[in-house]
Structures are given as structure tokens and as C-alpha cells.
Amino acid sequence: MSDLREAFARARGEGRAALIGYLPAGFPNSDDSVRIIESMVEAGVDIVEVGLPYSDPLMDGPVIQEAADTALRAGMTPAGVLDVVQRVAATGAATVVMSYWNPVERFGVDAFAEGLARAGGSGVITPDLTPEEAGEWTRATDDHGIDRVFLVAPSSTDARLQTVASACTGFVYAASTMGVTGARAAVSGAAAGLVSRVREVTDLPVAVGLGVSTGDQAAEIAGYADGVIVGSAFIRRVLDAATPGEAQASVRALAAELAAGVRRRKG
Image: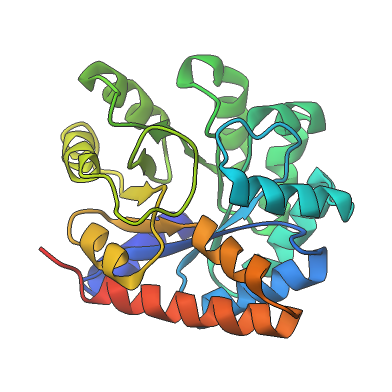
């Protein structure tokens, strides 16, 4: 069983959803991004999504775009992302990379999968790669024991859900709403129905992302999903902090609130 599947199984054994936290590697710089992620894990994050900063983030909202731009200006590269993954994986949290396909392809598909495996990474989420175009990636991840995670959305047909879920090996990422990433006052009501539909076609864990920012929202999603994904809310805490130490403390407090939320799951 992969580290990802073990993390979901452990959370399920405790009667709760897994908490998944996202931060771009190198935001606000390489060392501080690792320290901030360590604070997340210490406060209850089970699985870490390390973002690979990209210059053309079409699916990302303004908060994640600002963080990615900061990381790129600080010199973050795909090789640097793998270094961050190695340091984060040392915390014991299952660690995955969230990346658009272009940087992986430019780095080298086999080289990236091999480097991630060597760094202790568990898998990769590829939001803009479709299963039909993922033949080379499927082979490389199989060769190096890396989990694949693709996205589904409320607009996905039943046939599409089947296709995407069958291509995943780690978990299925259910986008709770159409549109770009970003914290929202309320999570889309379509999320629960989407999770239910995905469960009809796969036994893989299903995690919900896009819009989660509070413990109450985490508790709501934990009532029907296997994982709760939080990204923009963590980044906002870092952007609003005056110092790196303040950023770590603020992120730690949010992670603790969210971890408590997935443990008082509604439903």
C-alpha cells in the first residue's frame, strides 16, 4: 500500500477524513516553505500537496498565482521542488506534487517520476492532464511506484468519471465547483453529489478541494468525503503575516482548526 493510501486508511480507521494541505514550494522562499509545511503537519495535516510553481497557472485563482509568482521570483525550479519534497517527506506525512503538465514534460517525464520517488514523494496531481493523453506518464509512474491523481468536476458525465477514476491510483480529486481555485464563504452544494457519483465507479478515496477555508467547512465535507483539501486559505495566512515566524504560527492555528473540523465530521 502506498503512503497515500496508508494516510487515508489511517484517517478512516480513526473515523474521520484525511486533511490535505497545499503550499507552493519556494513560497515565500525554499526554507520558509518547508518550515511552514512542517507547521501544518505538526498541527494535524495528514497529506501535503507541494505545488510546483508555474508561470501560466490557468486554473489558479489570484491568491495561488501570487504565491507562485513569489516562488518563481525567489528562484524555485522543478529540481528545487523535488528538494522541498524530500525535506517535507521527512516529516512522515505523505507528500505529493501538484503540477501542471508542461513543467513535468519539460523536466523529463521519466526523470521527474524517478526524482520524485528518490525524494520520498508519494504521487502527483496533474490538473490539466487527461487520462487519454497520459500514456507516457502512466508508464513512468508505474515504473517508479508513483501514484497518479486526476481531477473530476460536477460537470463530468458518468462515463467521464469512470474514465478518470480508472486512471487514478492514489485518490480521486473532486473539484467542488467549476472555476479557479480560491477560498469561498461556502462550499458548493454540488460536491456531495459528485463524491457520491465517483464512489459508484471506484473504491479509491475521494478528496474534495477548491474553496475550503474554515473548520466548519472541513467538518461539512468530512461528512461525505475521504479527504478535505485546503490551499488558498493557508496561502492567505502567509501573505497576511508580517514575518516568517508569524506565518508559521498562523498556518499552524488554521491547520489545527481544520484538523479539529475533520474530526467532528457532520452527517
